[in-house]
Image (cartoon, rainbow, N blue to C red; front, side, top):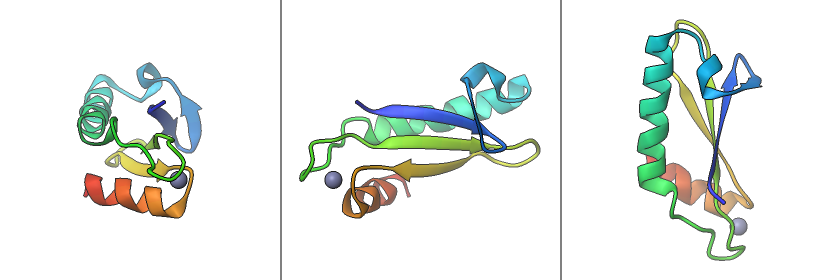
Length: 82
Ligand SMILES: [Zn+2]
């Protein structure tokens, strides 16, 4: 299943623990965009969905990392997001 994971300074957190309200809003917007674009994508080879990791740290923009079953699928999802 498609999954979004949040990390703050490399530590796994819930969306509510992501800094202040503004930051939470920015991260939520980024995650929504990701869901819209890739939540229905499945690896053709392994029938697995991707996991998107939203990396957040204070005073910087959230960065997205794609994790998945194989490099090819990760590449596909990454391209869909860019
Ligand atoms: Zn795969």
